Length: 392
Length: 163
Image (cartoon, rainbow over all chains, first blue to last red; front, side, top):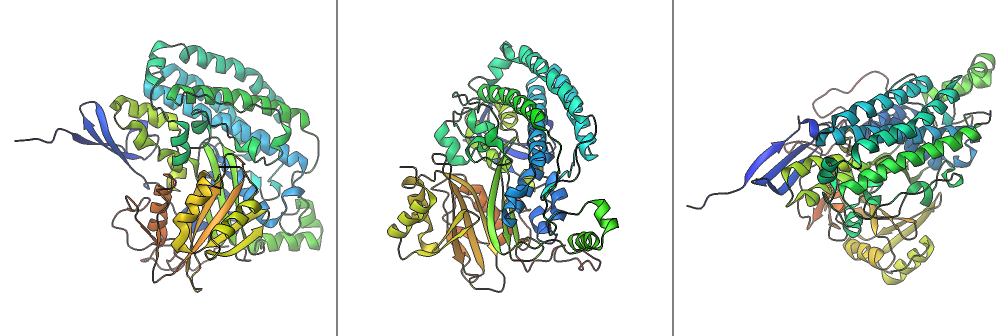
């Protein structure tokens, strides 16, 4: 009698290498993966539905919880989208834009550090994990200094920032970016030339540029396949067009390529942060848009107009005129897009989030088919997914 | 395939699908083209192959409860060559809540369409694997529809303030 010679196993949702609550149903022929079916939604919180029932400002904390490894990038994408909807993009003060870029790049490093740490740990390189988390801790401290929270920052506002940088922040971030290149060299010293690392990543999870575009890969995952595309350079926002940085690409399309791309991207981020520090001139951090931005505390307690504006914005919110926009940013994981529709009320009629992880994960089945079971772990790591934004 | 501006792309779309283009709108520098749903696969194929919109950024549904047609399916296209965006929309009637799948044009549409089915109950004709994606298989209803209560069907409405 013929027997079924494949075995079906569940990987996750409680599996440390799935980086959250991702379940993969794998059909195995010995060590070879015949098919992989991802199941998501375990972390679905209905963010888009909740957003339809909140005023525009009340949605910012919800965005923190999408890609919880890069909250400020989510904040940035959202506030840029609302600013575009309101048509106030040009009135954001220079200082606010510079700080936004600085923190967005800091966030990129933060996200990439967790990716590197967990990816390396999954493949068996424990030391890098400890080192990368050590450096990430310093970024968390910087986060806490500016926003009061280590992860759910809720720091950006429509029109600018919730507060200016605390005193002495520049000194601390300077010391961080001075130390970081040495740390990156340490990681590379542990991994890049390491034979085990190379054999676990080189030639593993190859995806060609054409397939990557078809399946919607964006960000570093796409650039690892030689797609020269970065929204910071190609559709700039927050003044990115004025900074000098290189878009890093590699052409092999394998896990090692994406590893190199992300490491080099961290160096580029440090370059951008250094430029932002040179540009930090004193000035306001919130736009002069009294119908949208909360007035300064001294105006709230000192003038009747200030009090009324404060009351109106808090209790009712602002009302963008009817229309729809799509705003995308280069988040650490790829294209993060917000599609907003306003019906003229103080709540969005529709807010669609285009999460990079959701789309990037879709490439997983075709990347693992016919490969070894052990490569599944490497490929999940290299796609750099976060279930918070996949499930929303 | 060549790179072109949104305006040129819209002109070409209008020329090629004169009876299908229902509306063209510009807002904040973004172009939206509303087309008949019968032609969506042809329009998308044309946009991808002739107009250079090789990347489907996003696909989603919108519920305009109370108006007719009730739903819109929205396609946010991007051209990696010319770095420009174009939005296509198709109106979908509630009584015939289905559209042809574009997963044959862009593979990435597969999961987006599953999500739209899951949250809006819009079916995608010809989809290879139209299952729920975020909610459980036995979930009743489609939560992003405007007539689906915020806190779920079996909960009383919150009586306090929401904002």
